Amino acid sequence: MGLLSPLCYASDGVRIFGYGNSGSYDHPYWNWNYVISSNPNPSPDLSDLTWSVVSNISTYTAFYLPSDSYGQQFDCTVDDKGAFTIIARDSQLTISSPTDTNIRGVQFSPNGGNNTWSNFVVVNPLSYAWGTSTWSQLTWIKDPTTGNNTVVHLTGNLAYGFYVATLNQAAAIPLPMTQSVLWGWVKSWPVSSSSIFGPTARRLTHLLSCSTRMLQLTAHLWP
Image 1 (cartoon, rainbow, N blue to C red):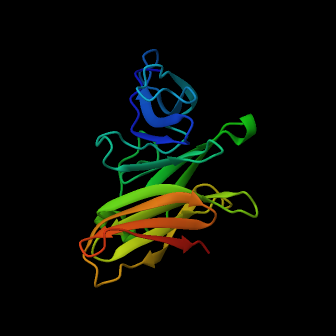
Image 2 (cartoon, rainbow, N blue to C red):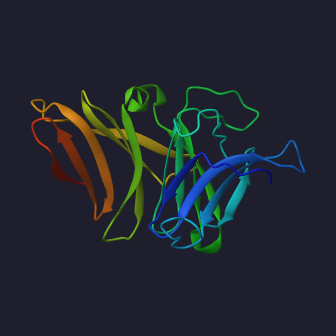
């Protein structure tokens, strides 16, 4: 494998994870998607930070997420089971395919030692609100009954509120991500910033600030 320069980073609170794609020094026509991980609990100044490759897969097998715009077209998250998920505005079926209007992503899961890579696609990409959003965040929510995690993509605009999309991990691959829920702002509030925090037990915790109210903290119960 060649030089590793991750496109997106996320943390599970113990390790830092990164995702990227890279060519190979030994095989110039090979290209790989990869996930790397830091050592557990690196020091605050990162003086003891080390990296290791968790897993990799050919970009002829998994979707290729181009690396032209570092940090501007990707959202990623890692859950408490080590499953790393990334979504990209621009993508290709494989590294040799043309870029199109579909929004795609990939997910790596340790799966009990049997490393698994899964492709996923956004349902109805032309109406997906990410393209007009002013902020976005990928996170996950745990079902307290089953212990299963659901990946959630939030895209927001200060004018209308935020949309919620969920990844159906029980469906056939490529997994579908469907945007279906809109939560709007209270229109009398001039919203200046918004953040979503997760996960908690089937709730999305929403922190809102505006000129008339410094903070409002709300928890949206997940269906």
